[in-house]
Length: 150
Image 1 (cartoon, rainbow, N blue to C red):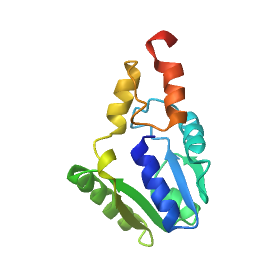
Image 2: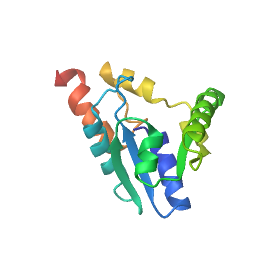
Image 3: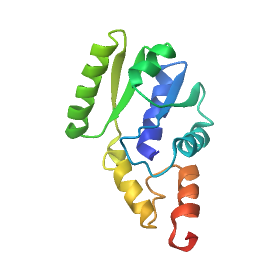
């Protein structure tokens, strides 16, 4: 979770009474941390946000949405390249689950360059990610990935 993600969740929490931060365990991707740890760290980062809960799942987002009566997905956009990928996903989700709407929130300019892929690489190599991630995430990454931790 980056500060950009946290900003999107914070802003979404002002628009909706309840926001579910659904953390996906996608075997096709190569996450830095297992879904259980990611969920725990996200829960720590959003603990002071009213109406925000953290859940995790595997499988299709539309299946999760149907099973949990979710009608809106909020996605953050940093750049045009994000829009192209997100538009394709939103259209596919709409085809699979017509009642599901996708709302895009633009990232603040100060977070527009932060990508979780870059943060993962910096952390893997023992670099300082404190400017890019919430404190709880930074503390965990420092403890588990800093050069002295190995």
